[in-house]
Image (spheres, rainbow, N blue to C red):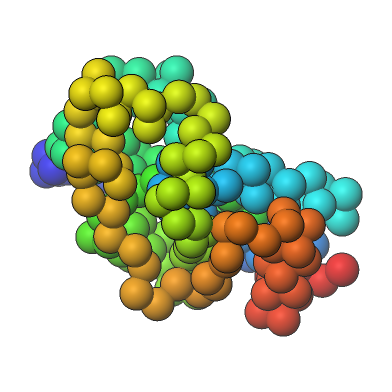
Length: 201
C-alpha cells in the first residue's frame, strides 16, 4: 500500500460519529457476511436490510457485484486484486460507520487476513463477522450465476471452493447455517443486534 503524502492530513469534523448515531437512534457497525458463492450471503443480507429498514434503522448494503460496477471496476480476480477489492470496501464501510450507519456487506472475502484487516480498520466492537456456512455441494446445486458450472468446465479459473481456497472464520460473531430458512437467520441476527445494543427496537 502506498505511503500517505505528508501534505495529506486527516481533518476531524465538527459533527462526531456519536452525534450522528444519536440522530439515527442506533450505533454504526459493519455486518460482514462471508461464505462461498451461492451460500446465501446476499440473500440474507438483503432480507436483514429490509427488516432493519422497517424498524427505522439507517442502513446501506455493499454487494460484491455492485461495487465492481464502479468503485472496483478496474480490478480483476487475481489474489492481489481481490485483496485490493476488500481493502477498498473496508475503507468505504469504515466511512459509513463513521456516518452512523449499519453497513451490511456481502463478499466471499475468502482470506482471513483481509477480513481481519477490515476489522482493524473499522475498530473494535463495530465489526461483526457473519459466517454463512453452506456446504459446497449445496452452493454448487444452487449455482445462481452458473459460475460453478463454468469453473468445473475449466472456463473460470481461481474460483473459490473449486481451485481457490476459502478460509472459514475461526471465531465469527455469529455462525449461520446456510441451509436454514432466511426468515430464521434474519431473526437470529436481529436478536444479536438487540442483545448487543446496536439497535433499540
